[in-house]
Image 1 (cartoon, rainbow, N blue to C red):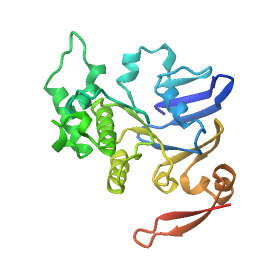
Image 2: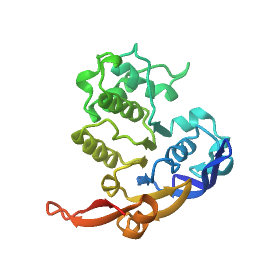
Image 3: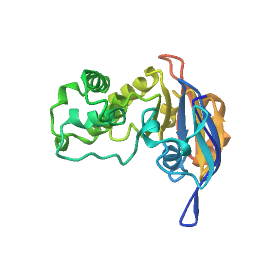
Image 4: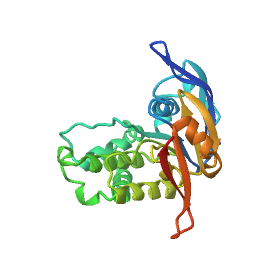
Length: 253
C-alpha cells in the first residue's frame, strides 16, 4: 500500500462532493475511477493529490498523513494531470514538459543533464519528441493533452493521478496512453468515462453521488445490476474473438 484514504468527506456550498470514501492503492496498481458526471471523481483525485484538504477523514502517503507533509515532498511522489490543465501560451512544448521537474529543483540543485534526460524520455513516451520546439499555442487539443501527461511523467512520480486523460485524443493515442499507463510500473489512479477502457484496470472504484458504491476487479463489479443502478444502462457482455477479452455493449434501461 502506497496511498490510502480513510472516510474522506468534502462539502462545498452545502453540497457533499464526497461522503465517507475509503480506499487503498497498492504499489504498481492501476486503479480506475468510474461513475456518472458529478459523482466525485475529480474531487477525489484532488484530495489524493493533496491539492485540497478533506473536511473529514485523511489521506496517507506511505503511511504518513499527507496533511503533515510539505507540498514539495508530496509533489516529488505524486503527479496529477487535471481535466482542466492549462499552460501559458508563450512557451515551447519542451519547456512546458520541463515544468514537471520543478519539485526537484532548488538553489542547491539547479537544472542538470539528468533533468534534460527526464524531459526527453517523457516526450518520447507520449510521441511528442518531434514537436518539442513547437509553440504551445499551435498544438491541437489532443497534442496538449499528451504534453500534460509528458509533464507528469517528467516529474518522475511514484503515483500518477489522471483525470479523463483520453479526452480530446484520437483512438490510436487513447490506446497508446492506456498502454503507457500500464507499462510505467508506478501506482496509477485514472478517472475514465469509457467503461470498456476501464476494464483494462486492475481494480475499479465506482462512485455515485460522492459515495463509493463498489470496489474490486472490473469483471466482478461491473455486473448488469450495478450498471443499471449507477449508470442507468442495460449492458450485454460480448467476447472479442481477437483476444478473448470481455467487451460491453450498452443500451438505455
